Image (cartoon, rainbow, N blue to C red; front, side, top):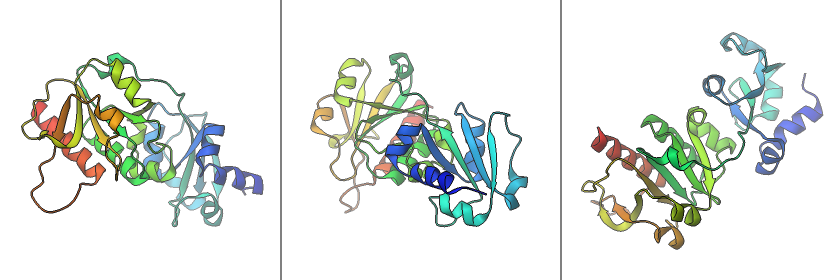
Length: 248
């Protein structure tokens, strides 16, 4: 049975401040938890509904297991309908991406993306198309936000996320910087080469002026209909599709 202090602690991790303070985030659902078990992430504790125990895979000895009932799970879950399992996972140590990890590949760069669902969908999309890293501006939504984690459907376990001061970071790199802009070259006529960064902007404001200055290859997804704009996660999927198509 969970104590009041345990419930209070786990619920505090619904908030960014306490995730950062304690170095832990939540993962819900056995499918996503399985992905983290098989990754480099370290799982601290798994809380499980006793009726769902049979779905647990074989676990490393350093993972704590705690049986709860459905009512207790509802108190600590971020979901309206808990999925039978909730894990506390260690947040990796913060570091900057190495320049060598940008060579001979394409990397998505997110400038001020705010919606957790969009962020999670972009991570999941990057995983599908074989992208390894995502670089984010400091003001981009946190990758360990519960809604982001849920939207990744386990892909966060495989994609490395880095937060950088983008204008300063882009000044230091020596590979092409592509950017999703309205006045760029058609994405279908763009010469991608073998490596580069692909910058996608905020849902409402687009890419910031300071970052636009660092873009040397503006790219546009041609508009055929009358929609004012594309969702940033949809744009990310189109860019990933085209880059992979051309490279292959």
